[in-house]
Image (cartoon, rainbow, N blue to C red; front, top):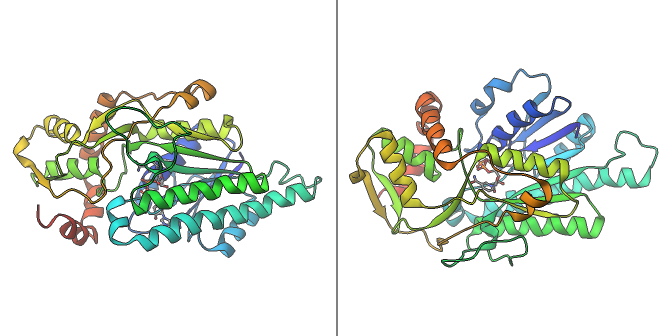
Length: 351
Ligand code: NAD
């Protein structure tokens, strides 16, 4: 792992991962390829932009020529693919971009990585690429669909995605798997539960509720608020990805989760309580179509086989996260004053 291509590194998890990797591994350099869609924000990376081991390139993972150029120029040996359209609500109103970015984008990256992998197979004296290209696909537990009141997703749970977002992520996973089976490429897939922490775009539950709560705005809760998710601090997701890059067995899938199931309404009430506001801010709104009721991750494989475990307790992580958003009001204001306003009004105008 010398020259790492991180895609989607200006988004929430990607930007946290870049900082994590620069900090934990002094030998590697990072190229961050990001299209800077509405979700990409270079303000997430201000503290590393002058680091000589970090380069930002604005561009599209679907651009074969550009991706190929980056592989050649920077001698890429590792790809961590975060780039995606990531918001379920948006996938219901605009599914097409989810399919092109999440599926075709992943296939484009794989194709370029495969051509460098082939150089290795064809030329055993080529020292630069003698290890080939490792490809890690950052996926989600949503590919498994929804659970009833009991049970957990394991890596062998059949895929049953319910939203255009999760269907596109499941398709990408299948293609990554196929490139391993067909071409022998060294790939891994991580399937993580819901992340929270600093730099998350405020269309997602936790930063949305913190932001609204601080401004005494209504807190729009879908349906009865009893949808259950497993929550993991973003830095624990980053350490899991790094663990898989270092120790993951080629071709394997690893679930990542913190054994931390919470109903959405519990989280909203925790935020209200921590900020010191009243529950009358809660506004129940029409549920999202196809809204999965419960996700829960069985993390036995990554904990027992690779020795990873989360460092954060949910209580501590949430306390720090609420504090972070309070201390970074400018970061939030910069985002929420732009196109986000129109989006927000369209989504929650009836609330
Ligand atoms: P995000 O929406 O915050 O960031 C996505 C980034 O991808 C943005 O910076 C955006 O500009 C970039 N991007 C979009 N299309 C692109 C393209 N065509 N080319 C290059 N860059 C492009 O998303 P996130 O929450 O950081 O999620 C990152 C990844 O992790 C996604 O693949 C998502 O499916 C997965 N994931 C997220 C969670 C979660 O809770 N957020 C949980 C599990 C898995």
